[in-house]
View 1 (cartoon, helix red, strand yellow):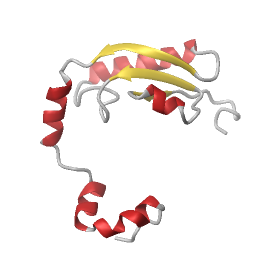
View 2 (tube, one colour):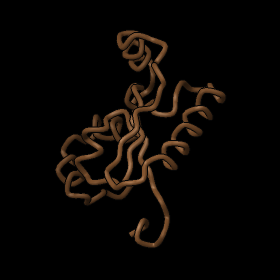
View 3 (cartoon, one colour):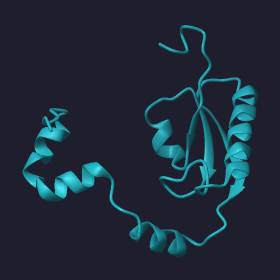
Length: 115
């Protein structure tokens, strides 16, 4: 609907095959870890470079379903990224489910519990 209204869109994703499976109009693929699509925390220059490259890809893709792989490489090994992720506090939804696992079926049906 957004595209039909005249707005051009693009999805920035580290998983282009999965993203393509939901029929997005354009894809900017990036080889970054999940959850860090724009880059490392606090790296303003690197994040701006990703934004600029994504917008440049938006201009270059002229057909629906087009994919451009951005020229960025993550500076750490996958093992280093995973070890850092373990030290990060789990997201609130994960914390809630750890305490209230019986609510998972409701959440999967999009029946979000109050409080």
